[in-house]
Image (cartoon, rainbow, N blue to C red; front, side, top):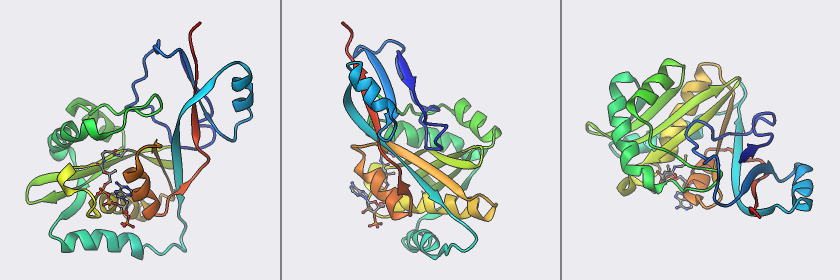
Length: 224
Ligand SMILES: CC(C)(COP(=O)(O)OP(=O)(O)OC[C@H]1O[C@@H](n2cnc3c(N)ncnc32)[C@H](O)[C@@H]1OP(=O)(O)O)[C@@H](O)C(=O)NCCC(=O)NCCS
């Protein structure tokens, strides 16, 4: 049994789109609660214990924001010879291939589990208004980020960079490109999240200015 408390109501990121949590976790009953939620105490009194953490972060921009640093990230990567642009339906087969190659690098936890999307899933996402950006070297797609609106808030659903191109500013640059484009289209609130163990993802998002919200706890109560 998996229950998720408060993710949406507090405006934090959620992991529903590609999150696959078994109905009957072998570990017992699993509940995700933000650490500032009074229900943490109630759960502890009921015998739940914390088995892991995940994080959420928000970036709120306004008209006074200076996007120079975001634009610089994109420009630096362009200077290194990579092309960053928004992706369209014709690019989605490349996204499927990239996500297939990076799928095993996303940390799998009870709170965060990424399933490489199929072409049909991606086509449906774009048709429903999601938007994606990618980085290319020549014709090869080496990085992708996909954002989906959840009301006023644009949440990053997934971001990945081919392993041999990591640590060169490319992941943060594709995300910066998405933020600038969405900002220019009038959007101001962005969210993201991930497993506590994912320091690369956390580092890339903090570098872009995302601000961490209180952590999410994964509570588990063992089956008797
Ligand atoms: C997460 C991921 C997309 C980051 O992409 P990347 O291109 O390697 O990241 P960048 O090079 O743009 O790094 C940006 C910042 O994060 C920091 N960072 C990058 N890798 C890091 C690591 N392993 N540990 C700590 N910080 C790290 C860098 O210091 C950098 O900050 P700076 O630019 O101010 O120096 C990439 O590691 C990846 O594809 N991981 C597998 C899939 C995944 O887990 N996706 C995220 C979940 S949605």
